[in-house]
Image (cartoon, rainbow, N blue to C red; front, side, top):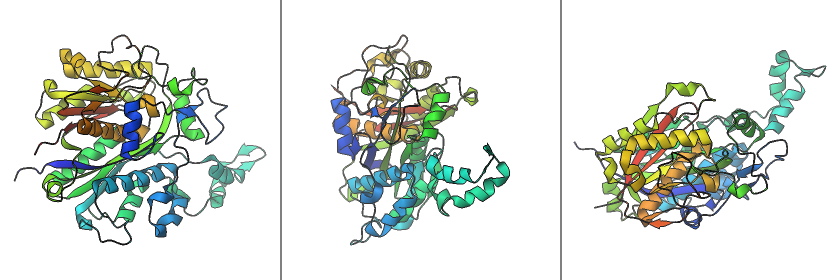
Length: 436
């Protein structure tokens, strides 16, 4: 039996630009700078004080009334995923268990969930309560740490397990089909989408919600990235211009918080119910560079291999690609490694293919990064418009990507979305314009 085709019928995006696919698309096409000075804590002790923060946000408006108490035990990452899922299902026109007054429009056992997540950072005020009783004469006493943990709420751990993003979404929406959580940094969103698509292709599910979400906007999250030397420390007076993917003036990245989830479903089912089809999923690939274990050494995680595998999976060649959605962290060595990977994957054709990177607009979203990138690729295919690359003015030496600071009309039949993470993991997905 031939594999079933996979349609993308729903897009849910939450970033510093707001919540919802249309707000996201509008911000992208306008080239809006959404990075600001951090407000959720005092960043004065950090060299980088800018981030893509989602302001005035709570998951309470995205969950049923009888579930709002649960928001109290959701870390920010979970709230973002829950909101993105609600938006994606509504965009797809699929009724789930979250609707109080209507029956589900899909059998729960045929609805899957796969969400990429990161290492959720604990909040310092909570840890502080535990640490206070673990100090003796001004020194931390490991033997008292167990007693100190009693100061934490009994449900504390449920805020910080990466799989809880998927758990809350499955509970809220009644997804009783295949479920998973992938924790591979930025590629997690693409890997989750790829696995979810396989479930549909082999008839293990009729529809799947997949993607990634994360927030690193905590003191611990900032500290880790600062110690890795990845953050831009030279644009605090002009935070909107701090992250400059592939630009000659790139000086590091800024963190953002956000996520992108998509609803995929069997093509025949989508067409049969008259769903709007943003794009079709047609291929995926993944790779790993073992040298990534040296986290201070820049690597694109074998991205060229992931892209080649994805094109092979889709049965296409480099000349078929009409859009590249690149990772573009803005960290000089990482940008150069990534640009080299794209050049290896596409050769002389690279300069002819329109490309874009979204990081300059919203910051680096970590596990949420490639889910948002995939959403950008699907919307670009739907609208046949390549979004501008925010803060891109002049290419860095060796950057052969065809980037622009302006939105461009294009004939996009196939798009490739590719990302990588510190640690050596990479992934790529191929999307196709819907053709009956």
